[in-house]
View 1: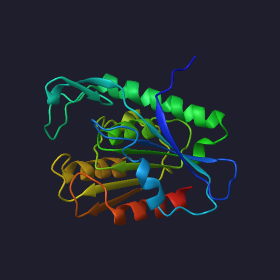
View 2: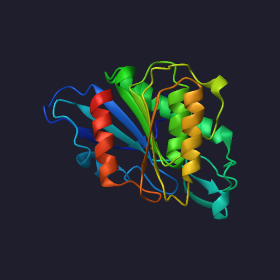
View 3: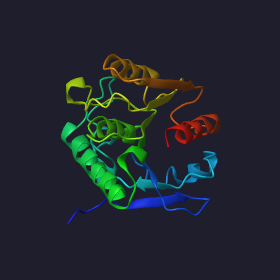
View 4: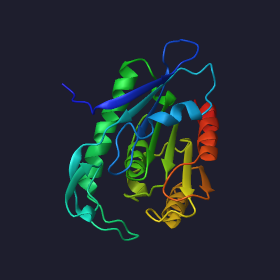
Length: 221
């Protein structure tokens, strides 16, 4: 029997239809599934969409860069260099747990092509791994203030039609903007069509960005 991650679930369904779309959105280091729960009403989604937002909670594990403190984390970060030395096995384990959530949505009646994978910071690194190794076509990948932790084009499933939106703050002191640009360059070189946007902000999200994300979701869903 599959053991699923605990999740916060928010539904956008003004027309009270059967849910046929889903967004699985991963939080950052030390946060929880509640972190992005409040953004749903700010997205300006179409009234005809029936979308289940799934915000999973990361497990509590020791994090090396924080002195081994136990906190919600998708994987251990071993050092904070630009190269971002990370525990690859833990990323793959977290990605497998998100693949299980995708399969659960499919079992609930949401087709793969109506599922968006989103993630912020550490959650975005896992979102990359999930979306780029998912054999069935997805609706899109949303990567916020994050980096491509496993930059291995040979391991990517070549769903070149996957819509990818990468957002980054120009003043981000936690995940420097060069890492968002590197991910964009790597994926573009691998044949993906990437929408890369920047905002005058630090390691966060802002309202104009959320409104743009909402328009993107309206398009891909």
